[in-house]
Image 1 (tube, rainbow over the protein chains, first blue to last red):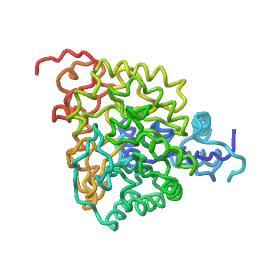
Image 2 (image 1 turned 45 degrees about the vertical axis):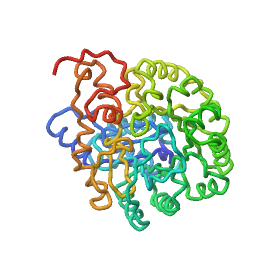
Image 3 (image 1 turned 90 degrees about the vertical axis):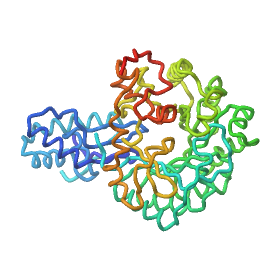
Image 4 (image 1 turned 90 degrees about the horizontal axis):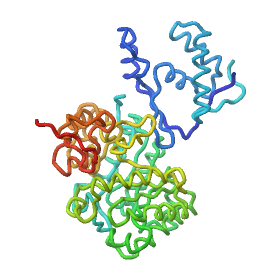
Length: 110
Length: 333
């Protein structure tokens, strides 16, 4: 899977940096944080919270970066193995496309 | 998730109204109104703090000429702007102006499937016809329309016909609002409000109807958690003070329009400060269950139900929702 993920303009969203910091602090303390959200999406009146990784991917889906570029940037930020991050990116984007939050278009930065 | 600012602001620019509805929470309210420059400062503040939605209510928003520059400023700053109207003044010209703002959606109050029910509830002969005509004007102007219906004893038996009528006139969503026993709603509660079993029966029927309804049905009642009907990602309990905030005409914030308890001055202190620091809002977010809620198995899902109804009925945010049909054990204090 590749292409440029583009957000549906009908999806209203907001990131909450203070909540992201709280998640990072929880992780550093060894506390469970997978279910904690920091990006809020409002889709057709329903709210969805994205956790740390999903929120990062969503924010990087700027309509310019393709999936490779999203994964590279995320791997750089978290000093994580690229192939592992790429699996996370593919899984989230597939789900988001399925939900109608994102669509994939050809092209991008590579 | 605790937000840095409300996601939605429900904004009463004025309490002036051309109707005299029997359930109105705010008829008789009066507060100083801000000059346009101050309203525009508030718009800047909301946009700077990334408030996503602003909905103008009241009062009848279309009576207030300040609506137009304020709505335009909000739309230009990227907010999704909507308003609720009784439709009386919403002619073809008003619909065109709303399209030009642009409004993300306009909600029209429709409380009956026929003039007899709607006009009596709204205490204004001819209001049913004007509301339906307003939907037609919005459709012609290309403005997404919704319908707001307050469920009460007089229309609960015909709500499906209201939905069908709304859809036939272009409304994509029908909000089936729970009755709030605030203001006149409290004065007329014995005549208008359903009892808890009546609410349960209504919601069970509406949830069964929803999948095949000709318009999207939306509910704003946290008590639906009792039926396992909370949507994915929905905030538990009342959204007031957690996702949304109400602004009075003078810039004072309250948790919602139905809870006339001051939470801070947005014009003076800014929305983010009020949102973060208000003891009133903190109390909305951290209710202490009382009465039957304390032993109720559904508390985690509903968080005590609608705080506005509890407050209106008892004066306490923490009291059980008076619409709640869950039995509870009501243990001793």
